[in-house]
Length: 205
Image (cartoon, rainbow, N blue to C red; front, side, top):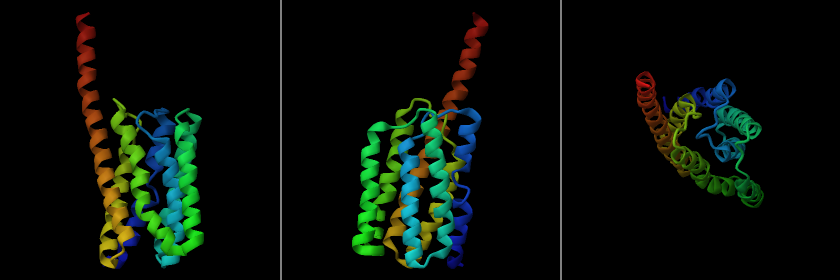
């Protein structure tokens, strides 16, 4: 049964960023959505595709390819809406360069070693932006629920295969998704409390 975990991860992973894309298209709301996170996600998943192919995890190529394309789409949509973080461009390019160098110098092992830290680097901007934004109304709960589902599968699969890189990816993704879901839920409660208060004030006026 554990052999089926990459398939389950693919089911969660392939449509993962569609809820965020649809929300951006529908509302245009970028509050709390990190451009750095979307860009790093696209870059890192392109690197994970190479790692999965070299490791023989063929099923994993589907969600990593989808994440590369769809997270890249989120990044472009944020740029068009003026939500780009120009200060982050330099270090994101530097990170992409490191991934390429690690692959050239040491192949799958070098790339995998660097990717062990990729998940932490990738989710940090999303958490930073979400928790520093007073009302992160632009974040899609659907996307982060799917992230939780996919990375839970990879965490268990990594434990079974004793793959430290997949374990790190899984733990980081599960913790980050739970924190993001908690942040969006709190923002929803704040909005629910605020709207009746405003309505009451207007009725008194």
